[in-house]
Amino acid sequence: MNLTYLLLALGILVIPILLLFVKKTNFYQTIKFALPAVVITALIFSFFATLFVIFGAWVFNPAYLSGTKLWIIPIEECVFYLTSCLAGIAIYQSLNVFFPENGLDKFSLSMSNLMLGICIAMLFFAHLKLYSTLTFGMLFVLILYIEYLNKRRFSYRFYRGYLASLLFFYLAYGIMTTLPVITYMDTLDLRIGAIPFESHFYFMAMLLMSVYLFEWFKSKSKA
Image 1 (cartoon, helix red, strand yellow):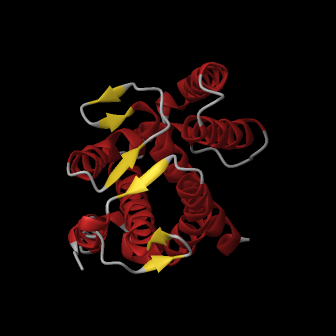
Image 2 (tube, rainbow, N blue to C red):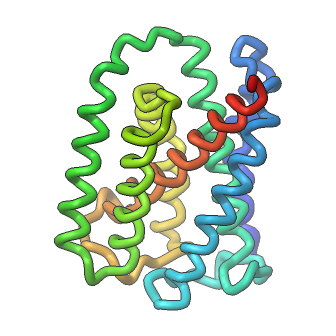
């Protein structure tokens, strides 16, 4: 038994725990909406992780795992989804409180359209690679729905939160891929350091889904 990946995943909880004690962020009041959002997101992305393992796109290194599994994926992967989404929402919520101005929202649609274009291009060039296809396919559907069908407007605030969250993304994914806890077998062979290009967009899709659900649960509480 090795607790490396589990400790890494749990270590991300430092971010939301610290922000809970910063009263101005109001995260202690909204965490009740964040928890169901991250659980739903973690379950959905755990399903995709299961597919990646089944088809050989991801290979986990047992040397860094506890040996406990959920279906056929390490339990640590599910914990990582929970903690990273919770940390992302905490950062998103805190930035919204400290920087409430939303003037740059007028550029969010252009940014989303750019992301949709990137997704289409990547789906064209990497349609034979499972990790790439599911990652850009998920992100495309999420952005398309949120920008053109969803009535809640939060895209600019999401992109801002995502950029801030890249700090712990690079730390966590950098360790995971350098050790390596996980090896990606089916990618475009484009990397930033040891991190596959696709992982940036996989993380974006994961965070976008959790933030959308967070906003949805908040809006339902006011209805």
